[in-house]
Image 1 (cartoon, rainbow, N blue to C red):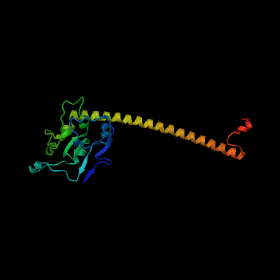
Image 2 (cartoon, rainbow, N blue to C red; image 1 turned 45 degrees about the vertical axis):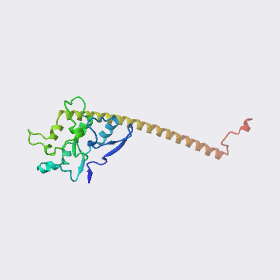
Image 3 (tube, one colour; image 1 turned 120 degrees about the horizontal axis):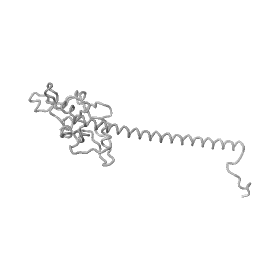
Image 4 (tube, one colour; image 1 turned 180 degrees about the vertical axis):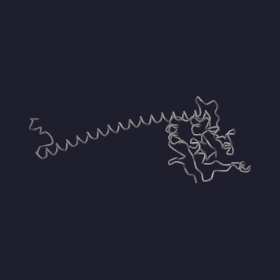
Length: 213
């Protein structure tokens, strides 16, 4: 049974209006050459990393036979907030790295954390100060930090756009409310006028015959 670490984290998501395709959250779905468009990035940034908890992760048979760490551990999510796990590839990925890997500050980057994923479970954890594990090597690297900076900048831009849209929507609602209140006042005036005419026994329309027409 698969348990999500946060509410409303669904594997398949919304429709891409440009290509009429589902935006897939599974990090193992995309190849290294995939370029996310603005709409895809805005959505993926809004839903955060896909951190899937399994009651039992798959075992790497070769590592298991050698008596080495042979499977992923969900506790890694608590240690690295941008870490993802793909059930499809049984591999670990980096959320910011696969979305914002390219750019200034990336002296070198491979597809290990983007499309292929990292699955050498016996090498994930550091063995002392001099022998850093794969997780620490990546998540403490300058290139990873550069991808986090680009992620945060994009997120801030997205927030500003969302706030601007929210402000415009609020303004439209206020204008609609003003029009509604004005219409109510017009209706009240018309009803009061009708009641007055009824009480006075007057016609609702002008009597054109009395005006010689």
